[in-house]
Image (cartoon, rainbow, N blue to C red):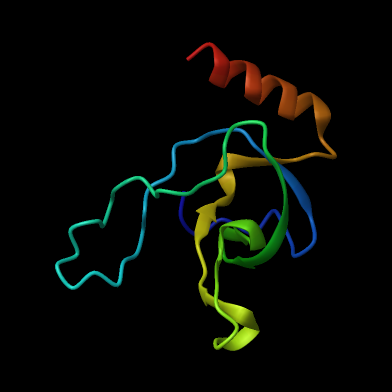
Length: 104
């Protein structure tokens, strides 16, 4: 749901509970990749540290495109919806979410 309050902040450790990611932006003039699955994205069970948040979207250093010529050394930030992640602090919810994904 758009407009959610950010549930994660910079530095929070999260685990991926869903690989259902869509590409939400492109620099391709034809816009042919809008709405397609991102080529690089977190996988179920992967633990990551939140690099930054933007509303209900979060990004991770591992999945940002690096280039020392750009601000912060990143040429493109890749944003993922926060609903695809759980805090590793909440172990019961993580376990339940991963089980649901495995059996769907």
